Image (cartoon, rainbow, N blue to C red):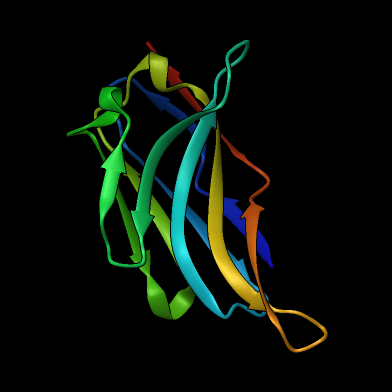
Length: 123
């Protein structure tokens, strides 16, 4: 299973961006998808997560500004980011937690990460 993230770029403070992350490959089920970010010199942190039941949770600093959503048919997760701040500058990574068929016909749990898309917010 591969994840392809896109949508990052340079934006002024107060602006908006929409990140997308599409999963490809053989997937039996998706339990949750999420966005994480890692700023320069800092640890990676969870930004937003959406479960298979469409339950969402957000990191405190992005509540009210970011919205995570899913397109089940496309196995794609989105992150709508509004009112962006310079502190949001980071590389954003998508994550998928799910299960898939193995070559032996069994089902295994897996976690995949996207390659990261850079978001830069200028002041």
